[in-house]
Structure formats: structure tokens, C-alpha cells
Image (cartoon, rainbow, N blue to C red; front, side, top):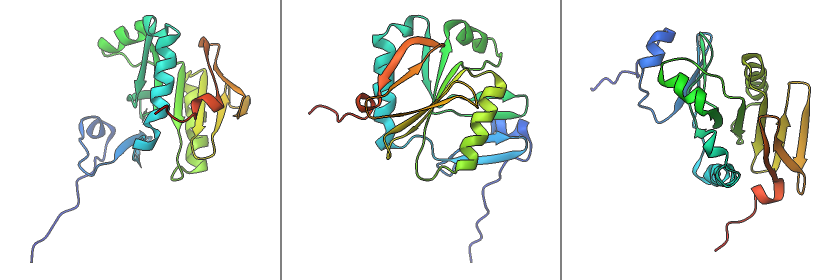
Length: 184
């Protein structure tokens, strides 16, 4: 009889920072709790592609970068991985020096496996840490929630325009354009 051992999960935040999961999932750390998630799924990559193309087209790539699933230290004991985050060139240089930086704009591409309480938890954490704009995108429902604070949210449908202002003033897209089928 062969015995298998469960993978050793980190017990401390320091262990978590150097841990390499082997189970195919990604993890976030929240005050001693590991939160497992699968990251953006293949059918959601198109959203990143559409938004990244808009980012480049508007010329924002000259001032910063649009990054998929970066490690973001919201506090000394809290690491999250937004699906997409905007970092300025200055923040990139600060990160290069080992400093923790908070993106001003983050995007979460949500799926049927995301729990409402976890979504709300992240929104609260993002704004507490200094994020200025959060987009929660629900691909299956073709709706985008644009938060400029925990109390101020705009629900965008169909021809409504989603904006990343004031962080990226000209970064805006109609919901229909975000979910438009890819040309053949």
C-alpha cells in the first residue's frame, strides 16, 4: 500500500511568499488565511486582450503598464492578485527596488465560482489600501460594476460607458464593445 502525503501548505506569511503551489491553483493571503482561486480562465482572456488593446491604443503604455495577475501587497500581511492592474512607470521602478506599490486601477474578471462575500471583501481591501477605481466584470451577464469608492458604484450594461477616470481619464469602453464577438 502506497501512502501519499498532502501537499505542505505554508503556515506563515513568510513561508507563503516563497511557496510554489503544485496543485494548479493560485493563492492569495489574507491575515493568515490562504484563499485559493483559479485565475482568469481561457474564455476570459479576451477581456484582458480587449482592455490591453485599448490601453495601448490610448497611449497609456507610455506612462505605465497593464499587468495580469500581479502580486499586490495591500498590507504587510495581505497579498492579493487582481486579474488586471495598472501600474505607473514610477511604481514599476519602486517595485524593482523591492518596494510594495498599490495600483490605482484594478479589474476583476468574475466567474460563477466567485462568492459575493469574497468580492465585497476585496473591494473593501482595495479601497482601504489606496486603489481609486475598481471594475468588476461579469462576462456571463455582460455587466460591469465600476467602483470609485465602496459607496459609489455605476452598473454598466449594453451601451453604457465604463470609465477608469480619474486614474486613466480617456480609458473608457462601452459594455457592448467589451463583449463584442471577435471578428473572423
